Every structure is written in structure tokens, then in C-alpha cells.
Amino acid sequence: MTQLPYFQQFIPDTEAMCAFGAKLVNALEQTETSKATVFYLNGDLGAGKTTLSRGIIQALGHQGNVKSPTYTLVEEYHLTTKTVYHFDLYRLSDPEELEFMGIRDYFTTPCLCLIEWSEKGKGLLNPADLIIEIHYQDNARNIILTPQSEIGEQIIAKLV
Ligand code: ADP
Ligand code: MG
Image (cartoon, rainbow, N blue to C red):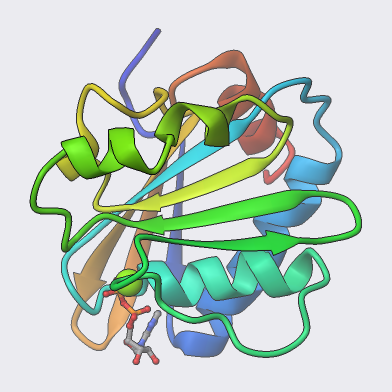
């Protein structure tokens, strides 16, 4: 599979980041999935990974706050159409913690897993369907999507 970015989008502000989350949800909802869908959200601190996650989780019907799972490692949202597990592994000191929390079980249902700082859980996480990179561009951001599976490709195809 090609590693070239298939999709790129300029994100001028926070609202546009949330709106892009809604667009991803729309594409995801048109895609048949029978297992967990996994998005890795990559980007420096403050790039907007949690902001995009908030856009996604709220577009799936969650009302109210989306807390950063920095201290809890995972926050879960049981929504009408999907369960979302939102991970932030930034503070993970020992990958064994993931074993303790039963990380494999999170990937066994047809849920959506959003994973910030996935590199900290290398080898213990399911591979991504879609890698979402967020790059700073002055005060704005640039998003690059790279599919890692057929599901990822189908989602991107529905965005364009
Ligand atoms: P991360 O989870 O990547 O560390 P956050 O989403 O927690 O980042 O924080 C991003 C911060 O940057 C928020 O305060 C958000 O309002 C701000 N911001 C400014 N411009 C943008 C933009 N274009 N896209 C996303 N966030 C932005
Ligand atoms: Mg974050």
C-alpha cells in the first residue's frame, strides 16, 4: 500500500478542527465496519489532537465536555451508534500498564478507538486504520490523513 498522503486539509481555527471531526464521523458512518476502527492522532503537544477528538465524539452524539484522558489514559463514551474509546498515552511510563488495563479488550468490539501518543504503546495496540497527523502552520494547522487499511481508504474516499 502506498504511504503517500491521500488527503490533506488546512484547518484555520479550533472551530474548523471540530468541524473536520464531524466530517470524519460522517465518512465513518457511511463505512461498513465489523471490528474496531482505530485512528492514531499524531502531532506535537497543543497541535489539536484532543480538539479533533472532541469534534468526533460530539458529532457522534455526546453532549458536554470531552476531557483529555491524560491522567486516566482512557475515557469512554457509550453513544447511540458507537462506543468511543479515547486514549492519551502521553503519561504512560510502562507499557505494562496497558496490559493491566486489559488493552486488548478495547479492540474487540466494533467501536472507534482514538489514540493520542500511540507510539508510547507500540507493540501493544492494534494497528491504525487511519493515521491523522496534525502539523502546526503558524496559528493554523494542516491535517494529513494516511490510510493503513481498506477501512481507512474507504473513509478517506468518502471525505473527498
Ligand atoms: P493536543 O491534544 O494535540 O495536545 P489540544 O487539542 O489539547 O492539543 O489543544 C490545542 C489547542 O490549540 C486548543 O487550545 C485549541 O483551541 C488551540 N488551537 C488554535 N488553533 C487551532 C486549530 N487550527 N486547530 C486546533 N486547535 C487549535
Ligand atoms: Mg491531547
